[in-house]
Every structure is written in structure tokens, then in C-alpha cells.
Length: 247
Figure: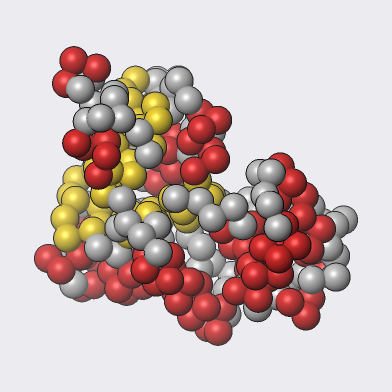
């Protein structure tokens, strides 16, 4: 990889790309959860990843977020190598996973203030107010998270993920648990982030939302990326058929 000039900030590919993945394989013992993944996500674009449960989607997100080290292959995020610069990568990423990473005994505002301090944010109070308003939780900011519904916790997790204004947002089934109004809020938020030229990597089972929000999409089946293309090249019915026919 280094010989190809990919591992330098001066590489044209690195300058224009938010995420570069080359020959990525990840194993759990003898089981290959991901096999020979190659993928480039340009800066400022939204990428939607589809696939059935167990395809390796969450594993891929954790590798991009530098929360797990790959068995082989390389990942660069904003020009930083996941093996060598995991702390730099985490600063550039907001991550919404199946776990909200919230503290039940703290209020919504206290949770955000805690994470804001970890990121060393300036004007923390103003930023907390801003993201609480963005996810519609201003009126509940003094309530403890233990009393929140699943949907409210998901809203707060979204606020946590965008608090430090990351360059890249990784989303693992973010619409799960959200009511119709909250789903609309999240869709509008993702559109706004794209307008700010931020990069979004979205894992979802919702074909319609994924295709509507994304510039490009990928299909992951049994740990292999079997297709990657523009969302203009496929409709929901074709996408569903292609995935189901390979199960």
C-alpha cells in the first residue's frame, strides 16, 4: 500500500476521500466476518450500506471507527491510518451504534456536557443547547436518561454523535426506535450535514431511506462487498430483489 502512495496526506486519493479501505479482512477465529473489502467514500458524500443481519456491516463500522483492529488490510480515515492513528480517527468521527453510550443516571444535558469535556469543546454550553434543539430534546434536558423511551435515547445518542462536529458520521441502523417525527428529524439532519460537506456512512435495512439519502450504496453479503454503485443506478425493488436472491 505504501508503495502506491496511498498512505500519505499528499496522495490525490487521500485528499479527496473521507474513507479509503483496501484489502480489508477481519476474522473471528477461523470465521471471516469480512473478506477483501475495497471501498472509497469521497468527502462530503453519503454512503448507504445494505445487507442482511450477520453480513458484517457492524463489524465494518467498528473497524472504520478504529474500535477494532483488522486482521489484514488497511483503512484510512481523513488521511489517518487506522492502525497507527486510532486516536486521530476517533476525533474525526461521530458514531451511532446499537449501544447509545449514554449514562442512565445523568440527565440529557449532563451526558452531553460530559462528552463535550472529553472532546475539549469550547463554548460547551452553547453547543449543548444547539444539539439538544436539533434533536428536539430541549424540554427534557434536565431529565435523567433512565426515564427516557428508546426513541428519546436514540435522539440523545444522535446529539452526542454530532456534538463535536465530526467530519464523518457513522450510523448503524439509526432509524430504529424512532417515531415518524423523529425519523423525519434525523433525515433532515443528515441532509443538513451533507450541505455542510460532511461525510455520512449509513448502515440501514430501510432501502427507501438509504437510497433517498445516499449518493452511493454498497451491498454486503457474507462478509463480501458484492456491489458498489451510484444510488441513481438502482431502485428499491431491484435492490431488494438483488439482496434476497443471494441469501
